[in-house]
Image (cartoon, rainbow, N blue to C red; front, side):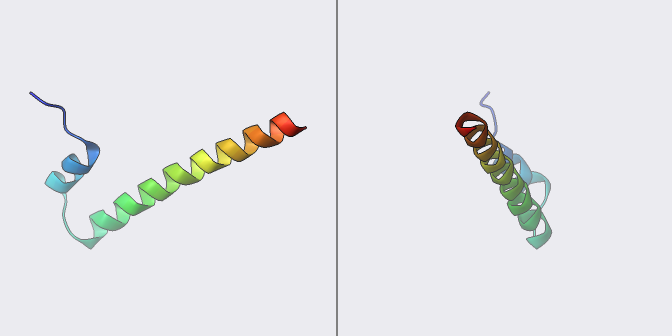
Length: 47
């Protein structure tokens, strides 16, 4: 039994533009948090 990726689970449980928008928002939020963490760590190191 293979594990499913979150994208496959999302595709199974919902369809349409709303779910696509929700997925893009989640990816955008995750990348934003990642960038924020990187920037804050760089600032902390440079101080």
